[in-house]
Length: 403
Ligand SMILES: *Cc1c(COP(=O)(O)O)cnc(C)c1O
Image (cartoon, rainbow, N blue to C red):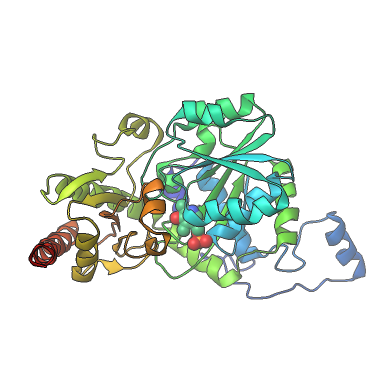
């Protein structure tokens, strides 16, 4: 068994006709049969081979094998986006009348999928703070069949202790799905703690280069695999060969990138924590994180995402966004480039102040995805942007007083 930093280089290479060092891109929608009998055997599952790219493709398979190997799972199913992976996982495991418990600090569209789409098919859900196992326990109902966890959560970075959580779910006959996007298998392997299904947005750290949207479901055994494969074939949200090639290429540097993301994010978080204009910083690698002890046990690093609260609130946040130069002003995360976003004035502005506060999205909350640039350059950029936001929000406040 290879170490993770060797696996990222070699996993999923498979076999290919000319022993190409990199799996070729089979940019094809369909595969010809030798003869009618071979076609019949393929459809009957009596022999291995490819039929049609929605059902399977060698380039896509190479990526699926790589992510499954890294997670310590049995098989992967590549999907057209992270949300397609989340949908595939939920739609495969749930039926009308079932109940889902979902982490409160979950990727927004996942919550919306449960509450506005799956709810129409008779699936109920309860949103809980999954860093509080008592709250999770209280949320179980006789018809709870899935517990959906994101850890660390988004954007609060709340951490769920996976081992007792999985035990609790299994005792009650429920399956646990873990969204491992923020950590990648380099920093956290949910199967080790008992998870049943792992989902990823490949768009983020796994691809790492901000040029593909994709997702992955990883399962633990052959029975689950054949169930999920049939389901994905009928739901239809598969990933294409060229995007699979790009993500597979990105994964070769995953171990190096995650190491750098963790080192730099800790430096940036430490810098922010001592800044007088910053009220608090959430980063799993900081001792001040409420579940730092769980993080140390369950994760091999704090990851690349930091949340912090600007003392100057919404105006300071807006001013800071307009002052950054190196950090890109964009949603998404996990790429080689640093990105910054201020939910109250950007992604969550339309929610209104009250709904934002209920979702723990405070006015001065800023999320940074720390890239692999020199950490001093990142800190310098944040420092000058906070300084500018201070002077601008002071001017704005002074204006209010004069008016
Ligand atoms: C981005 C993201 C998703 C959704 O992925 P897409 O590729 O954008 O569909 C799901 N979960 C988490 C944690 C994410 O960050």
